[in-house]
Image 1 (cartoon, helix red, strand yellow):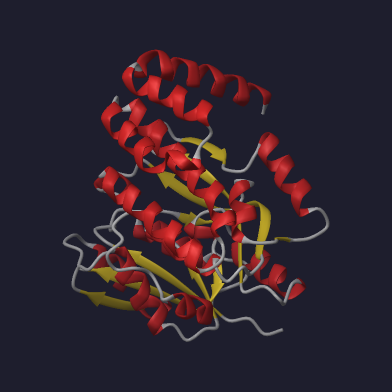
Image 2: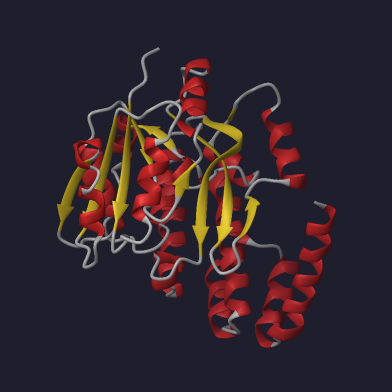
Length: 319
């Protein structure tokens, strides 16, 4: 089975980190067929850093249009059958492509695969595996002797979808799903993966880390776009898409978990009104107990957060 891989790295004002990302691709034990860096109208030295690698990479510069358009530019320019993604402020571990291409050879029916990754928190340099402890045990139990989940939704419920840096997907599957949505300012990667997921294709999974995702990077999309309406509109649109694609039952628990994470964020920020609005719009995704307790927390976030932190501390200790 012949496998060719193009790596797409979108970059916006990423001159400080881009070299680290490119170096991690060049250091792969199984080299990529091509590395495409798309400079999304940066105002810093991103272009100088990228062009310093000469013919080791393909460099494309475009007017600033956002991460989705930059990724689409890379996908459209790619010449390989498979596309791997890497954010400009992240990096791959050396065996990432080797492990994934061998994984695909063992499972030729797959159109995409993912893997575990390491979270590195920039403010403290703390590093931890994303999939670990009881969650790792559960994911391995679901996988059993297989190397893939039945669908992306099963993987999501097992906390085993990895991140954008660990996705390796057939180029044709991205085109079939409509590529990345240009207007999606936040969670544009999840938007893309869900649209691929509606095909109900199995998702391959490697449970050992393949990449390092650097969190709390200044100026990142996560820092820039925090409007609750972006999240609510995303969930509403995908509830409709899931119904139309016959995948509502599979997507519903994923939507509840995704919103639950954001509810926790907004409670931490003491934005109780936002939480109550989410409950009003999406309360049907949750049990009466969750709706009631979260409504109370929205009015009294301090005690509610203490309770959540206590429970999370117990879970981490158990892990």
